[in-house]
Amino acid sequence: MEVAANCSLRVKRPLLDPRFEGYKLSLEPLPCYQLELDAAVAEVKLRDDQYTLEHMHAFGMYNYLHCDSWYQDSVYYIDTLGRIMNLTVMLDTALGKPREVFRLPTDLTACDNRLCASIHFTSSTWVTLSDGTGRLYVIGTGERGNSASEKWEIMFNEELGDPFIIIHSISLLNAEEHSIATLLLRIEKEELDMKGSGFYVSLEWVTISKKNKDKKKYEIIKRDILCGKSVPHYAAIEPDGNGLMIVSYKSFTFVQAGQDLEENMDEDMSEKIKEPLYYWQQTEDDLTVTIRLPEDSTKEDIQVQFLPDHINIVLKDHQFLEGKLYSSIDHESSTWIIKESNSLEISLIKKNEGLTWPELVVGDKQGELIRDSAQCAAIAERLMHLTSEELNPNPDKEKPPCNAQELEECDIFFEESSSLCRFDGSTLKTTHVVNLGSNQYLFSVIVDPKEMPCFCLRHDVDALLWQPHSSKQDDMWEHIATFNALGYVQASKRDKKFFACAPNYSYAALCECLRRVFIYRQPAPMSTVLYNRKEGRQVGQVAKQQVASLETNDPILGFQATNERLFVLTTRNLFLIKVNTEN
Image (cartoon, rainbow, N blue to C red; front, side, top):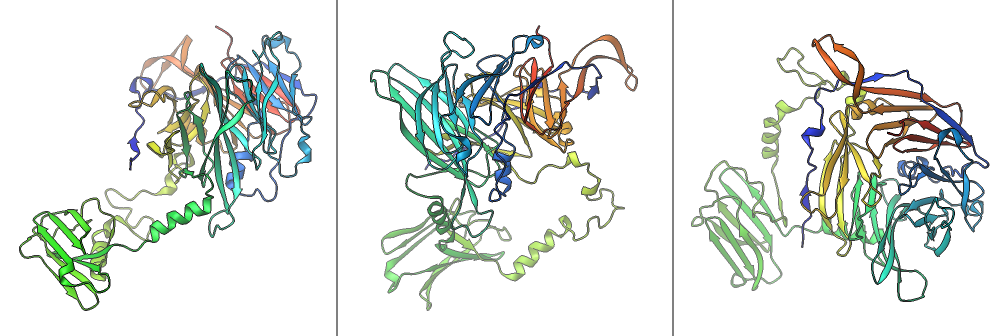
């Protein structure tokens, strides 16, 4: 059985700035343009039965504004009339109205348990679309933005079960066939769950294909399902379709076809509950191993071989236990005996007296260590200096214990520890795992639409941007940019809803649920001379922070950043904030 490789993220030191002095608030006005929408955005509010934190993460915080990364400054949203509306900006002072590019064939309001409609821009000429009722559309668009060649045409349309949202898709084209792979997210009720929220998260990896030679329609050729207990922060299919990467709080596993989650979990539980093969105890001088024997076992059925650092036990011509011992034993003094209770008792004499063995046979997990109460008391006494029932038992000590109440709110990390996993598309096994520890996930951004989306993590006080490279097995995640002190700054924004950055890393931005947008620019040279009085040196660069306040009382439903502009969507308006002027 192959074991997943434990990897780590390699930070590029030249991209860090240890002398960063913080953001300076700039009062320079930001040009802001407002467009009134013909029809309201098709917002779907959470129902009474969607009460968990996972429902809120997946659907309650859904970004209703979609950026087409294949074309510059082009955004889309879906309105209550089922129309997909597009706004492509060429000139801020000559903004047109959003135009309709496609209309969903189904009535969105007819389905009671529908989710929000979702769209993903698979390639420069393909789009995947969900109407929120459980139907998946694959649409050929032609070259979007070109009025002569753009024509949205349904190439695939099928009901795929319970409602879902699309979180990623890719297009694979070779000489023989064209395929589209897409990731669909559902939160489903767990009928037999005895604890927890009563829901689980399902990620379905669907591949739709058509042979180039045939005139047949596109059809589903592969459906795989991953299950987990938390909504993934990030999930994306590799550009070659050979794997999948997921950042999540709780791990995901593939479920075999025809096997539901309860069966899968029952198997896991049965493995955990399985009775140990043997029990063992230890003192400072020796170890005692107890094995339950089959019925009618005799002395002739048992073979035990002792070596200085090895043991071999055979029962009725079957290998029972064999391997390297944790430490050396006096093999000549070690013995075994059959007890009246139909059990085999093996006594091993330690060569190194006083050494505590954490395991009997190196790497063997089939046995269970039994500790007596005296041993437990001795261990507790040895660890007493590390624990206390009082918050700060002796503040006059030279090194008093840490007092959590002295920490600022933005210094405290979440207790949860997320992981980054890479799954192989053919074996459906985990091949690489990165334990993210306290590296809090912040957001994702598409820097190059031909590559996987980048993800941004908090590292200490900074926010670091990582680009996955599935083709580089040794260095699969590349550190490509740093937003100085942004990890610390964003933690203080308690009402933040969406987080984004420019694809060229020139700025990062976050918005609150209502009105306010915060922009954090990369350090730039100053036009005037500025001195740091404390250190008595000239400051060469300053990082600006800007705040924009939108003239609306409607909640913010969507947020996207391009190199030049920020797009902010509310129920009835689309705002454009000009952040950078074109170089």
